[in-house]
Length: 340
Image (spheres, rainbow, N blue to C red):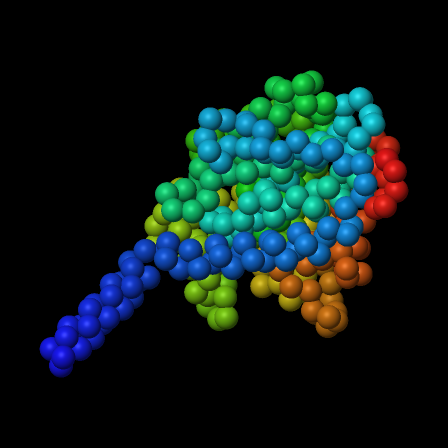
């Protein structure tokens, strides 16, 4: 009996050691925990947004833009009109390693209710999917949407590209690829859009400069884990290829007009402020929604998805106003509970 107990204790100790080594030698065990946390957060956000979704929204789900399992998109638009609608393409967040298009579905239905065709783009995340694969996939999705615009009932010009968190970084990188040929060559991705087709960006709660992200403090472990996983290298700060993922040092005056926002309690808020300042300094039309440090209640990362708060509603109104300065939408859908 004693020998059996010692064997059992030895096996447990060995398993603990192997688990510890797995966490130290690879980012993916930690990333699996993070992915689970994100999925729970997405579920809660979607449930809270359900009551804000207007009636009369048509959904077309899991349409393919490429051959890969994750190369899918969802399309939402108000019912009743056959005229091509202006398109808002949204790239979901999830720290580059998690999240899904399903986590932004109800928010895009809300946006669609204001007269737009909204598109949620899926891209590969998780083990084996590293930079720049998601950027390549979103770029491919844009090309597919433009080519198939007639069949989808969407307007192929004056596209609004949007994203939250990691999706904001990907959207901004696509904008750089689209408007700066030298940058596109350096990254090695041929843009799917012409610069004139991309008319505006909505960038919320994003990270835009890897070299200035605070890797210490309360969020240090999380940020080091996700950047290690996404870049494919533990020494991501020294990786020349991954350094090109930083937006702020690389923007040019050709960058599209942009709206940026972050909550006052978002650890990434300084990233958005710095990008906005850089864009304005080089003459890019830029609008922002930031909040005083003492704003209460404090607004966390991804605050904009909470439409039960005044700040969330303010962010939605500000984004819509920014888009409509450029070109108005089609007639909106019915409000919740009304006939379309």
